[in-house]
Image (cartoon, rainbow, N blue to C red; front, side, top):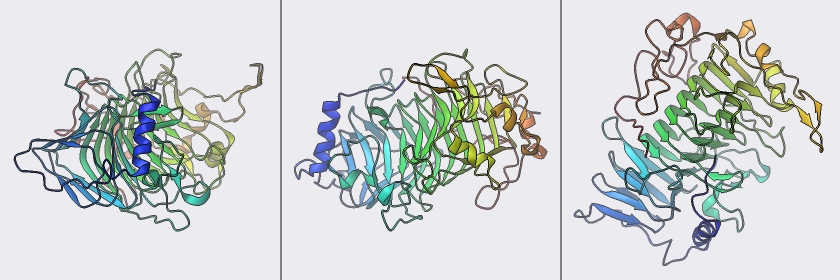
Amino acid sequence: MKRLFASLLTISALSLTAACGDDDNDNTPVDPTPNPSETEVDVSANITQDTTWKAGVTYTLKNYIFVESGTLTIEPGTRILGDQGSALIITRNAKIHAVGTAQAPIVFTSSQPEGNRAPGDWGGVVLLGKGRINVEGGENTVEGFFASGNNPLTQYGGGDNPDDAHDCGKLNYVRIEFAGFELSEDNELNGLTVAGCGTDTDLDYIQVHLGADDGVEFFGGSAGLKHAVVTQTDDDSLDYDLGYNGKIQFFIAQQNATVGNFGIEASGNKNQNAATPRSVPEIWNATFFGSGRAPGTSPAQAGMVFNTGAGGKLNNVIVANFADLAVDVSGTASAALWNAATPELYLRNTIFWNNRGDTTSIPAAPNPTVDANGNVTNPDSTNFDESVEVLASSLNNRVVDPQLTGAGNLTAPNFMPAAGSPALNPDAAATPPAGFDTSARFVGAVGAENWLAGWTAFPQD
């Protein structure tokens, strides 16, 4: 269900323009102090110095805009519109400081008029850092761009000298709407792409809504994420790859019945499953809510999939209402992380409900081996039965109704459990460790306080 919103020729031309550094087009600094009388500003040139986008001014991205150096500061309440073929990219030598408030969030959205907006109208926001990634040489071209030419503006990772704390900047109280696109198969821009960013990066109170690919995707690095909500994306809500090791707390994913693949797609390195660092983030207090549609429709909808040597340490999570699967541990490399003496893949203190219509257990997810003629040679090559392993008594996982009565509402969702919900019972939850909000003694992303109030929005077009 991924969309190609612009021709490859058009996107290729934009990528090559950025790579060539045309002085007339890309490297002219944006004036950091626009004329006070201006209320609309078109942004078509790369940014090479400290620049401020002011509240009360609407900025329209006309193409790929690279912040090459300096800090791009965006004031609370500023609106940034994206034209077809545009995106905002913060390179390794720059930062962003986009700090809104609950009363005045910063909004990135489509430049199309309200009523005509759609997923894939523009490309999204990309943060590139110098953190550690598990590819040979420690550097890579971020997805959504052609790799030819090794354009330094699209590179991420720290090479032989990675900086695990690399600060890509701040995004607080930020909404990203109608973004994302597929450049080619497995080469897409997401609502928010975070590649090689380190622990000093601050991502808090972020919504990605109606994106044409993933909501948030991490490529390596160790940036954290808090208070994030991803609603109705075409592909995965949270995707992480290439050695991502950050900390995530208070994360929500919501699917609709038409689009959406996985709540989480966790990958290691598809070319070398044993590559290190492994993709093993730690996630506390998350809610993954599927569409509840009938199973068997493409694309498959699942709560979470772990493949190619990826793990994850998940605690106090709700996985509910997914059409096909709750959990799929896919491949022997990820299964080995679950079975290790010190596991690097597990779910604990988790509530499952109504996945594939099952209210008493969770479905198994066999990974068959198929030969060249389409014949099944092994019904489950991973030899991992999720219906047994995930519900092992030692993990304190349960199949019980979390009573999320408004989580399926697509225009005004409410992810708070109803009074009396088992998700609110502190005895059913573990206490998060230092580095997380240790007061979150509940299961799921939202407890008794609705942290989404006031700054989120759910427009359909």
